Image 1 (cartoon, rainbow, N blue to C red):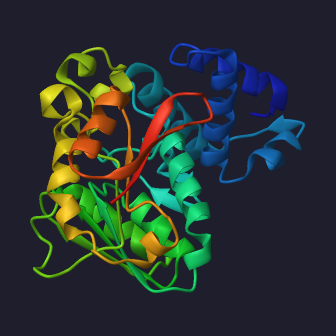
Image 2: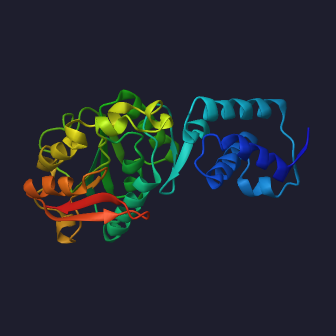
Image 3: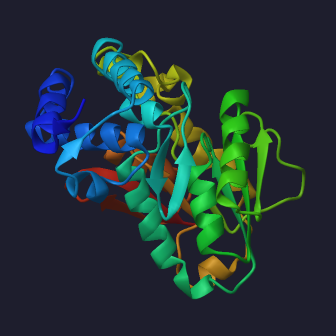
Length: 294
């Protein structure tokens, strides 16, 4: 049965308002779900005066709406992928969904590293999850050798899928706890990480679509969310090459995403012997990442 496009989207938006914080967000989700079900882009939808869904498409839409509204399933898991730094990153529960704020600092780092695009270097991504950071850096720096490490076998399997899906060859993924699987004697020019940084107390107040669907071990860290920053500043720092082209170009040697307590994180790095420990803000004005040299 054909329905007028604007009216159909309006109905979808009204349903989704139950799980979206704003009308604009509900509108965006309505368009994304409809485009996903119809296998077209949003511009093609808006170009139509009426919308006719096949019985299969209607069933898919009904199932997606039920999952989104009643089961609090994140939209990204329903869609199956998210854009990230010119890549299409596949997402599967419970592996952490790449966030736009993570994409911000990775894009910033890629811009900083632009002068080294033709230079060989070694980069280590700890707590790699879906592999989005490692793959974005590898694509932007084709002469780099990038290693991603995660202790979750599901995350590593997804990272390998994303490597194949995006056709990025200069990445290796390893299973293990932080630096444990790294071979002796190896060193890196740059270490990056989006580690678990939520405290147990903060976890209790997370939205259901996060707490019920995404891996708690990828979100929560002991010691009020600070444990992984301490491990990165001391354990991981031992794997930084003493002499590096990054140092010669005044580039950071370690970049980590922030949760709360930016001053405490910066203090950890200063105490560990890092210099030029700089705090950076995302587009929303929130403390989002720390970049440090050594």
